[in-house]
Length: 351
Length: 250
Image 1 (cartoon, rainbow over the protein chains, first blue to last red):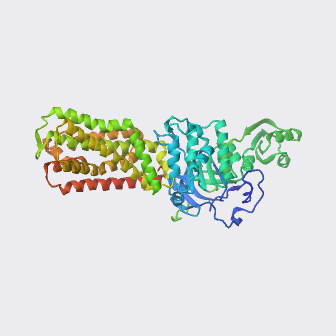
Image 2: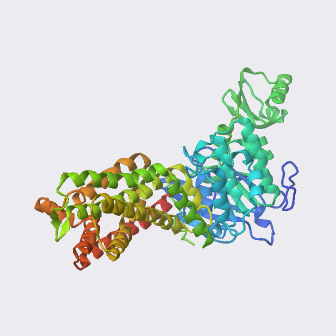
Image 3: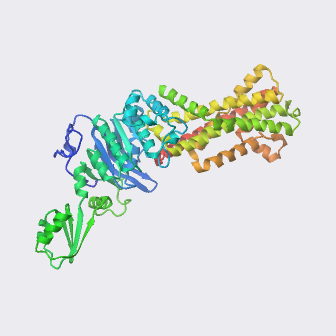
């Protein structure tokens, strides 16, 4: 029933050094025979906010130690996914497991840490010093990380004796990161951890997130920056309308969505010739209008000029992330699906 | 358990360090006590052998307890929830109920010094004189039976948005205080208001204190109403919590 998600290559092997670029083809995830339980498991999860379907029959498994980016535009279901994983939201249908237990149990067992979105607030209690909050949160866990380690990892040494209501946005984000790791958790969830940060701050945050993966923690973070997903994650899952529309290593995904479209008018387009042009992945002809999808638009245009094909009114449009999402989504959408309310099996039963 | 203790200490410490909050909480009932004391002849009997200066002491204890509870619970909880701290706590191992429990405990802990301070002012400036046992019994009673106010405060923090919480808290404070007979004896109000007063928690809180002073037995109806309020408000807190969980805004 679930729409076939695009598979951009497959998962890197379990013990691969957790960085990108050296992913090798591995059997599809169904055939992955890991003895160990996955860290996170979503099966058939559907959730509504009123009429709005926030998660739509979502299936997802995350291996232990994996760093996963949830990528998608606003409203794609990223925050809902994280809220469900944390037990903050109980989904209407489907089954969710975190470290083999119900999400709330996993959180109460102290093996989970999280940094949430806070809207306009700081996410911190007003009127106390940063060090007091970090100490408190450490005490809430049975086996916390040493204070100095937390402070160093989150780069908050200079902030410790500041009051929480005197922090800048970026500083508060670092403190909240410290709270996420204070309990030395096995699984860390970060909901748009770099939202509203400048480039510099964002990059230093990337290092902090990567370090979590290097320490063997399972990490899930939401973002709408493709570069961030690509640079930090082993695996990128693209969500749209509460469904997984793409799933794979970041580099492959990036290549796929970095494509551009070259459009021109041609009297007699030869599809075979066009298809053979360098960097062209798809050719669409409507009357005299030709649209080429290109991985490398520059190379394709050079090849087009050298070819015998006559053309005029040439234009190149970039595929931004939004276009990429749209492309991925429209490809993943079932043709009969017009209104989401129609012909859906709703009876999934609660765990 | 140690997590709960750590969180409780953190919250109480934070509340006690918040001096603006404490000054307002303690300041209003003390100020009103001094103001209203002059208005009437303070030795006049207003309730079964209880003088106005004694009546006012009990009613201002009740008023102070209400201010402490509604602000410690209502305003502060609403702000914390809007700021994201309450949500952050929900993703730590702290059990879900402990946030409410600790908030109610913290607000009860602020109620006690307010009661004691109003009594001290009444004894010092109001000329109220009681036996040591009566002082202890009265204080314990007024403190313990302030529990529904704590529940009301926390519920407001859960149910009312940040923008609305200050007007709602202030409005409720004066409605409950005035119609509950804290500023003027209910017996001097029109009949309909006297009936209405019996529905309000502060009337019963006040009545318990007055019954102690007049040496009467404590009427069961006061306990029933205050207990009923505590249970009903507690139930509403749980219900709000469930609704939010389903909606995903908890």
